[in-house]
Image (tube, rainbow, N blue to C red; front, side):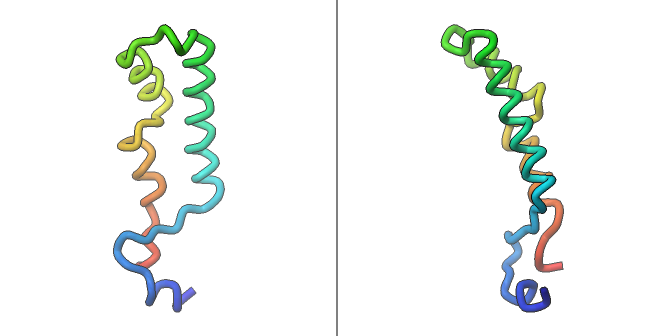
Length: 72
């Protein structure tokens, strides 16, 4: 809507449900993988590897959510 664009600041983005669901699915897969490998005994580095493999680190998924600025 034109009114939303006028009110939006530079840090307001449109994230459609399929995009959000994709990020959510990645997060769920990461946690399931970690839990399947007994999460309580995994090192921080091993957890990092799991989350990076599923692209669930904030630096990996944030660009998906910030792909469509509302202001444009």
